[in-house]
Amino acid sequence: MIGHIVNIKGPAKYKKYIKKAVLAALEYEKVDYACEINVEISDNRTIQNLNRDYRGKDCPTDVLSFLMNETNPENGKTLLGDIIISMEKAKQQGEEYGTGTEQELMFLSAHATLHLLGYDHEISEEEDFAMKEKQKEIKKIYE
Image (cartoon, rainbow, N blue to C red; front, side, top):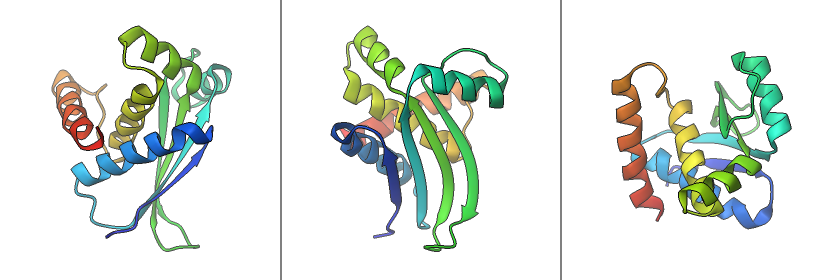
């Protein structure tokens, strides 16, 4: 076992879902080094501020990822980065898509983990398609 660490700041009842999805994405991508990812459940106001400050988009979004890719001196693991999820958006989208909050949190967690691993659906249609296909396969692991 590689021993990935997923630190989650947010409501306890959702932590197991988020961790499961992040670990499924790492497994699917065959990440063979010990890494650490921080996930924070936030609100629309906070994520809008981050989206504005870091992406120049002054609106709330569902999830943001911030790549770090550096060694954590405390444990020697690769700190891949941080994921911020808007709980308000996750609830809204879960209702909208008929999947529920837990499934939406899992989808967003896996999606953001792929971003931390270098995938970017905004680059091209091909990259967007590739990410969507990967997310379908990852979902099979965490379901």
